[in-house]
Image 1 (cartoon, rainbow, N blue to C red):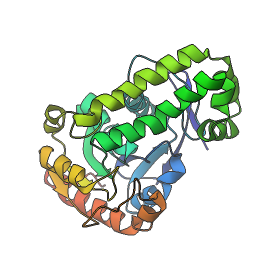
Image 2: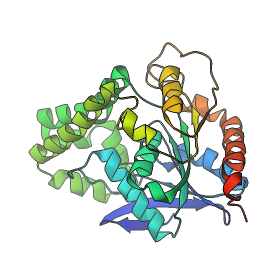
Image 3: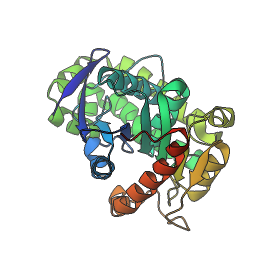
Length: 286
């Protein structure tokens, strides 16, 4: 699988499809690119060239902890540089959960380079912000406080990053625990500050400024509740809402595997949306 060097960081990626409009899709959580690959393959089969990648600190890409910006914004900038290197701009961009946040931040940071947005399993509200802040950051802060970087390396997520790319262990073990804790604390604050926003990472004003066509499929659990998805669709100026579920399950998170069972349906929603949304300006397909 190819890798690109993005700001000194090795990024693992794959391109599905050999022709057609460019698209980039990202999975939720800190899942590797395989988490979105089945849906990406369906979109490639429909005539798109789809870029999927392991974000830094995910999958088989490099671990890099720190920076002045929130982690999601760093991910958006990394993806922009990767797509620039692949000559894949402008792009249709999408994702689920954390991939949805990445897509929206990309559209806010690079508004002239996005043709459309495909968004599913949207996260917002205090429950989601506090739960994800702990999942992504607090547990690792506590590990570093209790046992230094060796304890961080022993946690499940970082064990997986080390197994996927051996150099990641050397990077983590060389890191001063205090610097690791400080970086994780800054990133955690980003999530906690988003608790009262329509979605984590974007204000109502931000969302109303996005002018490209968007398709929203709300989630169905406490972290990705239907109400948040409906509200996002209301705020985006040019948006189509498609609901796969009519109620939220009484659980923190519906397993992603359950959503993958509906990839055929999701792909059909997205391809139909793009055919209609992009047709007025002339279909991007050649």
